[in-house]
Image (tube, rainbow, N blue to C red; front, side):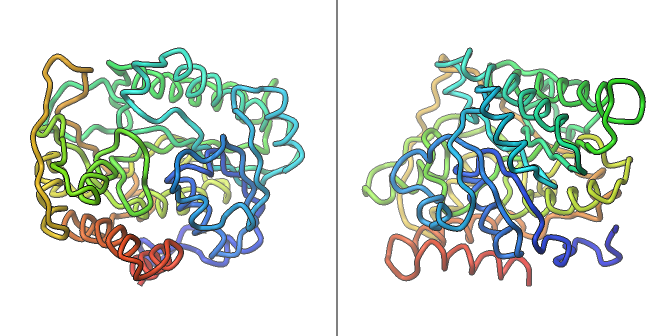
Length: 362
């Protein structure tokens, strides 16, 4: 099934596919749900209720377009029953506690959700009796951060200073162990299940209204006409538009479902090296499209966060023919213009997302 045309989706593959997305009410989950619906897939969701008003899930009216289920992935029995009922062909596991600061405030919930919750999902998939490809989404922060300039590769050491990063690294270990222990043809294993994991860089894009995230904080400050308070202004991150890793996930799952054993592993999805920019550079670029001011509120005594983080994407390039499309400037421009058009009442969230998807695919 590997495409002969580089960086291209097999559009026909997704038509009528029975898909489960955990965490479908979140920012990235909502974008993925909407895109899959446009590709003609049948989408089922398991997640907590969407957080805050506005939120992208409600703005895209997704509740009425999918089989929508509110279940905490820590609830093992109800989760298992629902997954068996849905009997998915493909699973995108995005459900997580996704915030570093929140992980300091609620470390046990973070570990239970990100590690045990992931195991609960994988355990439920063992009970299916038909073919299933499962992609577990973790983070670029799973690596033991050595604060070096080199991009982390998939076979570099895992680690994590804060509860969020370490819980995601632990999830990666659990995913790999589960694949080794329970996927295959020998005793205690099942042939129908293929598992991979994806580690994405710092994702931005329109429709993110989460707390303690950089772009939503910028937009909130701009709307209020206030100085934008920025922490860790010198921290470098691999910024990418949300559509970039999502396309990578779709391509990876196509190959996973086609029984390519060489893709049953972990993959980085990040930008080209020139898009590894500091927080300060991202803020200044954003304010070139929407005028405002910011102030550096970096507190060296606050919660620890990595200063330097880059990803190597060679593996995704070589095995999946995947490469990022938009550079740093276009990524920020698309993101800020999404919010400007939305808040100025020019077009709806649905139209904003349609425009970005069409632009990205063309």
